[in-house]
Image 1 (tube, one colour):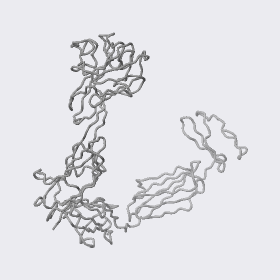
Image 2 (tube, helix red, strand yellow; image 1 turned 90 degrees about the vertical axis):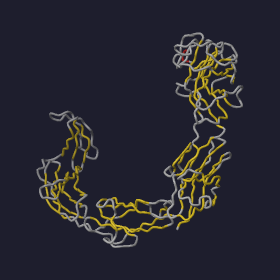
Image 3 (tube, helix red, strand yellow; image 1 turned 120 degrees about the vertical axis):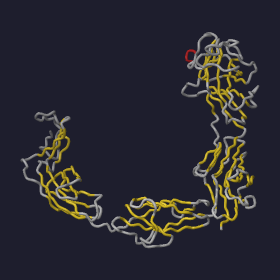
Image 4 (cartoon, one colour; image 1 turned 180 degrees about the horizontal axis):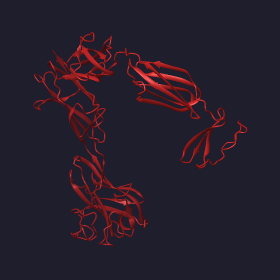
Amino acid sequence: IWDITEPSNPAGPILYPLPFKSPGLIKSLDFKGDLFVIAVGYKGIYVYKFGEVDNKPPAIKDFSVKVKDYSATIHLRTDEKTICFIKYGKSPDKYNRALYDLNYSTNHMFNLKNLVPDTKYYFLIEAEDLSGNKISKKGSFKTYPDKTPPEITIINPKQNESLPGGTGKVNIKIKTDENAWCQYSFSDFKYGEGKDFTEGQGTTHHSFILDLEDGRKYTVYYRCRDKYGNKNLTGVIHNFSVPAKWWDSFKDSSKVSENVRCKVGKGVKLDIPSTKIHLDKDVHISAIHSNSNFNPGGINGYGLAVGNYDRWRILIEFTLPEWAKNVSSLKLFLYRHGGLYTDYSKKIGVYLLKGSFSEEKATWIKRNQSEKWNNPGGDYLPLLIDSAKIDGNGWYCWTLVGKDAENPLDISPGDRVALLLKEITKNIRSDFFRQKEYSSNKPYIEVRLSEYSGYIISKPIKPKNIVSWDKFYADATLPEGASITYSIIDAETGKVLCRGLTGNGDDISGSLSNIKSIKLKAELKTKEPPSTPVLYRWCVTWKSK
């Protein structure tokens, strides 16, 4: 308990055993009212007050009710600190809603929301002081009628939006802030004289389908009525247009029908794959333990080991991806993390292994569980592909395809390639490399392409009321070694109608005579991957009736 002999300098808290309860601790003290709160173990919270026993109920004063159409605010004051609650509903003595204020205070305010306009409500308020004395008050009020018409928000098309030419229909959408019945017209009107929306009447979302023509500006007027009969006195005006042109700014792929090796979003770029290919298999084999398989950790946990008088070798295997059709360079990268007898110099060569092997079963003697090598240590072509001089820790690479290889491989997309790494300088030195199962610095194949290409084709463009096609435009950036070839295709037959367009306002009227529906095609190409051309926007125009 607290010693409040000197209220300005209380002493405590002091533990005090309460009768028949666990020891409690005073948690707070209100000197003005001489209140304290005791938390008693798991029993709950008890509020106490110093002084004589209080049997007098609190008094309610300054009571007020402020009413609106959909809400009401009730405020009251009591002559002492109380908790308070209110029950209310549409019938006297039958309340279906309640609000509580459980903070001891002399001021209480209740905000009653989501009420029905022009409706009488009944309520009961009860206040309880710290001693449990209660007082209640009954009353009623009536909400004001709703005299506010629905508020209209345009959803689709956006205000002043330009829809691409050839957009034959549009789903007009609006939203209201309350359930409503809506009408539209192409000139200003009074509610009751317009056409009803076909969808959403009596809800907050309304729509209808409107047929469109190219080369036109549209102005549509909207008015709505709520269930209380409130109507919009002025119409909401919706403006949008359908110019005689079609375009795509490539925010997404919604206007693209075919996409090959490109990515769309804030423009069109070549989707150039990562240059890194992870290995399918890797394993260390040892002549010292000729019948042992060391996948995945390697002998003594060394990983992939090479050396020790050519008694330790590495077997690896990878697959060249289908997209790697124009390879200029193919390199194997291994990360050295340690070694033995490093005073000796070391050179490691890479060779083409004849056939595949089992990562879990390969040994110095066996290719897999049932087949032996013709030559222990792995069957390989003796022609050296490339070699690397090994020094300290770090990355080392061997060129498999490219000008830096001593004897480059001849491989094609989709080929599975197995390799053997062994020391060339035979001495006691050994070098250890990370295997593919390790958490970092994993071995990989780096693919460099001499060129990469892809293309996109638009969805069909079919104008309404077309007299003749007019111009073609495109906006793009072309880094060095990059190009984009534009062409226009007959959407019905697939025939190429014109090719080699510049995008600078090309006149397409002659090439597209009597053609009703077309597709645009852009072929993107780079000779210096990963650099890529970027197509930001393209557009085609026509003349309408």
